[in-house]
Length: 201
Image 1 (spheres, one colour):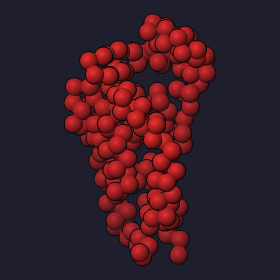
Image 2: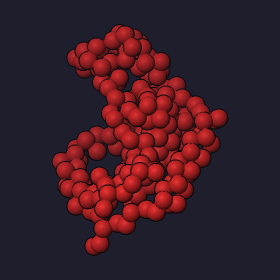
Image 3: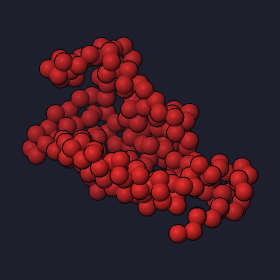
Image 4: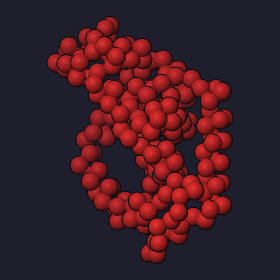
């Protein structure tokens, strides 16, 4: 297969304009997740996002979150650090990646695990929005807390059976990554530049 051609300057400009439009449209109606709801059949348990933010800020776990960490033998301070840990992600390149076949496939899989409780059919849209806005709000970095703050629905559900199934299938992740790196997109990803930057010959 031949490498993906570089975008023209006009294509880059349109891409930048599209991203700006997405951010401007999302901002006025921006909401944050208020509850993380763990779902397994008829089972429902909610943890307020405020409790997660408190844990991330102070290392102190309260309520159901505190009980769950104690039962699991987890150190609240360490969990708080994980919630705060930011992963550097370039905004424009991440936006482009989420619009590829690989990105759409990843969003589709994740939306079966994490989705708006009362509107699971828009799970992919919510994931994309939370990721892009979370990176923007985090100045190029995305953390768990930042993602929840950017999630455009008050109740975000986590499907426990689907999560367990995904974790059991992690052995296949390396193969997925390998296939991506060997694809045209993967081999050219490092050569993609931000809008306005000169392409490497």
